[in-house]
Image 1: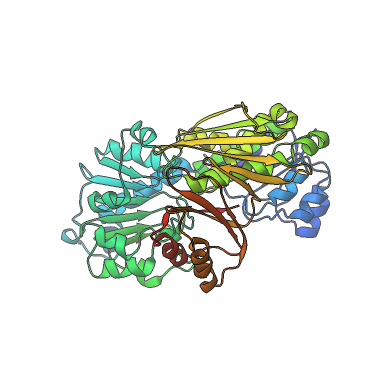
Image 2: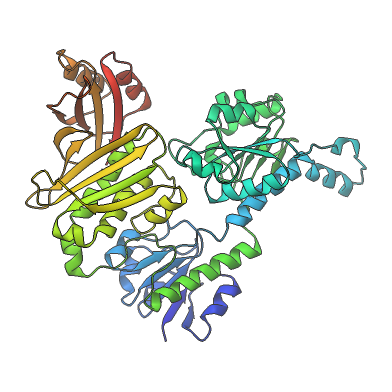
Length: 527
């Protein structure tokens, strides 16, 4: 019988599934040294957020085949160490979806009907009926910023209140949003039109502070803000000022910039309803994630594939040796395509030439999708779960053999389409497995996919001094240039230059480059 190490407390519904099917070892109270000793003979480990499975602990798990996270985040698991050991790592991304959606609606109802204030008044012996007069949701407009799993569930519930629902998500195609009876709109239109704005976006560099002073200024004075996603999506100082000055009517918050000590002034306002990050904390959600974790452990131990993998599945050493060099190249092509997108990707295809890639094209294609989606999905993505995320976003994917390998014996070509059209890029492996980007939208290169690369389209390639101008701007910003390549081709009257730099490009530096008269377009790739 397999040994399953339960490192953190999970709901009884999950533990019951292990009875008679595996030997359960309670490791909830173990320190790291004791955990290392206990994991040595375990076939599986189940954790929540309290236990950290770092490289040392994972290396001690000589028999480990699967690690299950009863929850979503896997920051407490060394994925690289697990992958190197061929250990499947799984999580439970759907278990708390309904709980979070219901909590968003609960907060909204509490805010609109002034339930906390009315309750507090009664408990204080006051019959504050007039002060408890609220507002209806009926025929109001709900704007969803983010249309992932939770956003979609909120939309379903809002429509039951006969609300009009609009949504903004740059990485979900409009057709996918309309399938659920929701109208896709631009962010500015949403901010101006919505009576209620509910946040359901992942926290990324692009989404951080999406609700700032400018966004709040666009909202109706009667508008309400709900945030059950991540505190960093909101500029709390700007929100505090807007609420105090009556520039918006109220806010319902479950998450904050600083936890567990949120801004006391903000949560203390009479037009704010606040809860301590409990949107996913329901008995049912905890039971669901426990069941999902245990079910996947049993699936893997029985030789099957888990439903929610988050890392590379096992490959034999020989297979890994042969296919290994293709994987980072495929991910680099995905990262490159992500930088070239002008809107949500609608389709993505990968074509390969070379024995190892042809035989394991599904795995190579998964790495390409991971490189593409990791930079736009705002959630952990690798080649195992990338196809699932692509399907959820309505991304049409395909793969096949390359019709033209440009003379390279090991070659990958990736094509991605968005509403602006289709873009193709290509890469190759040289004799010693060295990866190169050899084609970017028809421009030929011999580019090493590493660090930060600026792709700059020159509208007047015959005019001298362009390279020097770019060098001056980067130099003044104290950014070292590691390499410059200028493509020989001129397409549609423009040339393309690739500049590899040693540091990220600050927004003001990007803006200065884009403001140059000769710059037709700028894309920045983080390999």
